[in-house]
Image 1: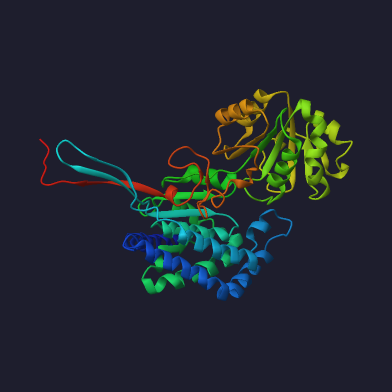
Image 2: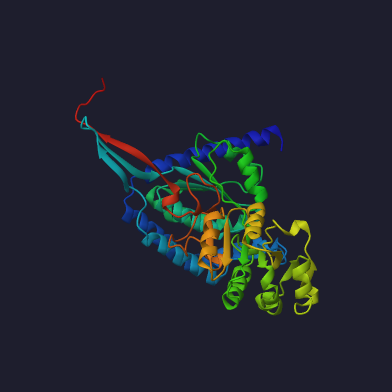
Length: 425
């Protein structure tokens, strides 16, 4: 990009961010009922806007190979749009996260202190190939009093433009259309946003590890990291076979392109004989490619489809597949399973299948991840399943927020101090 065009882009972004920051200051004047009415109006517009949204989405889909794992993430359908409308109404029904009294006290000098929840201000959401995030991010930001800058990818350019046009059309009569801004989809726009600490209060990347690493390395704006999901399930010596079978299938195959999908199955050596049963449905129903270490491979060769079975290479461990592929690793004990998870986990979601309560408790204590399960599928790592409504992302870091980020996780707080003339000596 030439210096002139880069300067023009910078000027365009600065101007838009200034308007977004101004809208953020106006948002705090809305009452909670007024916010909810607007969110429901956006939901009510979706049915009539559906033909246009699907046409825009079809333009995006036409540019992507149907075999690309991102294709499913990009796809909108009538059913998915109806679900999005329901999610918007659900967010409207949730209690406001603002104005909560988190702490209060009266000091010996009579000063009355209150710590209350407030918006972060302006959020920048950076994401790839997922137009549903455009609706979700707006809804959660708006409900929590935040303005939002949406930096989608070129893959979803037409879908995102149509969605944001719908949202801004609803906001316009309220003088709040600038509370949501769709930044240019070109990659060259991203560094300008990451340096805009004058206007943006937090940036939240959602997407590949490469995108997240780029944002983290180049941002002057504070980053709330939503990491890629390299997800394990450990089938313990005391694991129940029927539970394990259902959990493994659901975690891997329910929706293969999401960040909480299963990537690596760890199997206790004493339970290798049960491995064919654990994976039977994945082979017969889902045609899942399996990359297994030598002990697991020897067992599976007798039962699993040959065309779907491969020796595991080192790179298969620590890979987020986002497709119908699964790594399998044999471990001698819980300690070895914990070591493997510590080495390869992205600290997103990890699960154990066991009937031994002491083993489950140790797994809970020692696994360092945002969400840790016992005898349940990692598919539940989702804001809706946790009762948060839609989610802004799954945070894998430890500062500010961790796990599914709902409304409360995108607020901050401030102190209110009421006095009656006190001065400090």
